[in-house]
Length: 377
Ligand SMILES: Cc1ncc(COP(=O)(O)O)c(C=O)c1O
Image 1 (cartoon, rainbow, N blue to C red):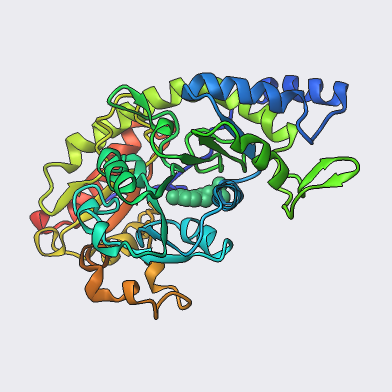
Image 2: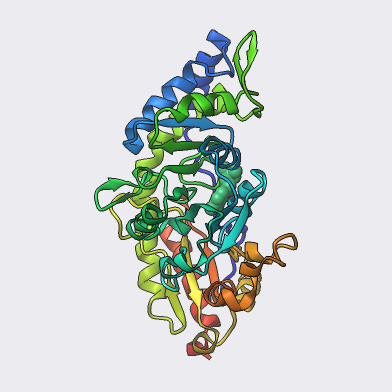
């Protein structure tokens, strides 16, 4: 089996032509407005409103701070029901707001919060449900909303993986009270670091602007205790150019996804998790699940063996957030309450997935996996 000469990573940042960035930077240099809601920030906000088909958007210097301040703006208290199968930032945003996470098990097909198990976790301290659209597969948004309406709860989504996704023709950011997007370099659309909140209640805009700017209302008034979480104009300029190349990148990722599917589906013990069947999928990740008995090797062994061929996959969302030492003692963090999450966290593997991967490289990765599988021995 042939190994790669240089490492193949899980993601590669989508970088537009350097000349286009230089042109943007010339504007910034000329108007000398580099941060604090400058012209590039305003321009990007309008472009993103259009692209995401949303009315209310606020830009931040990363997705984590967006989520922390979004939760703060909603004024949540007590407990929030969420998933253990997510990036640490989701649950840490609750910590930073003094909220207690209540871990709910996940659905075995989508790996998103299992809506059948939410209701039994609701107490008189519950104030919200925080769902994550894991790997680009949307949560069961309608059922989540029904539960939230019944118990008068807020609904927030960590949408770090669903930039531009539509579900039933409706932009994903229209569901729930608020959705966070991450514009980190690993994401389909990036500003190197960056993020956004989209939200239903227009009046939150004022509070979010205060929260991300130290609580300063005007030169003479500090209205509340805030943070510094503004997207600067150099990041925004980058975003304006990246947004232009997103459609081409998505087109290419769709081709890569199809190639992976053709070659991996035939291998016993591999299930493809990221279905990307929704209109306007984000094509954020291509993720598989390994059944060690059928495949003939555990996910961990496959992850290690692939490194020998210079292929670096990611055991995405390992370990579970419920396993972090400061949550471990929570009743809902106990293993017996999260059987699916504990099973899947040992099986899931994110594959290299970015537009610059050539067909040849994808086929070679699939061949290596096939050769490592039981079927070939
Ligand atoms: C699900 C999820 N939530 C939150 C984040 C954090 O976003 P950021 O890096 O923009 O702070 C990430 C990854 O970056 C993520 O994958």
